[in-house]
Image: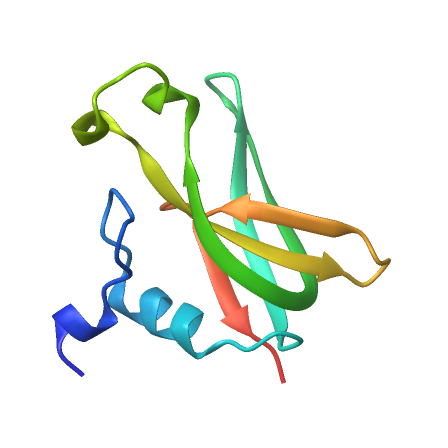
Length: 103
């Protein structure tokens, strides 16, 4: 599969080709594991891992896009899933995020 076929359109920053491929292959209900490095302030970081059922992904135009020309919009990939406790949740994909299919 070439790079053009793996790119997720409409995201401001190109995603890793493997992550793009995984997002395109996931189906509603597939089990996923999300690992993210979370940062608070300039020094505190920790890793968070959660599993759940994939629902879908779409794109989030951030607040930076407010009252700006369309060429300046910042658009990020947003993954929506359901945690094991039934909570509906989502996260935006960045360079500190790892997503994998489980099972």
